[in-house]
Length: 325
Image: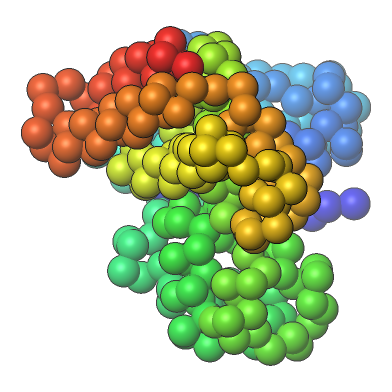
């Protein structure tokens, strides 16, 4: 059974990691005390006064009581000192409270809260995002923690391969650790060969939807990529490359080559080539050229030459491209 501290504060600007820790804590709490032993206070209900009352309330529940509090980055210092600090100082021995704050800009946890959590015997953990230039060193440290023998050049290759989102880098490291085992020595070449570029794989599905004129899937795939942190500027060349591959095959088929001739001279898995050929035969090469031109215009707009936001410009461009196919 887990050993619980009276209080926890998990805060910082790494919102993805904070969400993961919150989900993990809730799962452990429910496993120990059941759904009835867990109280979640968040959104407009998560005021210092309401939380102070909840911490001070008597309960007749059997077992440990867990209270999970979200959105504390919106609290004010005076309210924390008035309502939360006294409640933490007199916390019941069978109660654990976990505060979560997704900080951003001026939205910060009041200084009184971490002091009160520590004074109550709890833990304060900051989950901060790592600056882009520091990511390889961070990835190297995480690799060592997972038992991988990796040098800095390999860590740099990993960041270049999967992008700058910490959670994606960590998931890739965990996969490499499972596949290679403790103590495995990985070079930059090993990383390039083994680490899948998940964004590129998802872009294939986005391009497939564009070629099929499936506007709904196009927008869904694009929004999913954006939600996982992919920049529009990184997605544009990936989309353009996939469209050019289909266009090259379409041009060859239109010139009279057979699918077998195309497959004999193009690298890639037979299944993937069959799919590209099927797409090329079902589309209009001129429509593909227009789509590539639209992407070129979009790239200019995302480099500060347009009046719209990157997302708005991209959605409009994708809509035109899907309609053109």
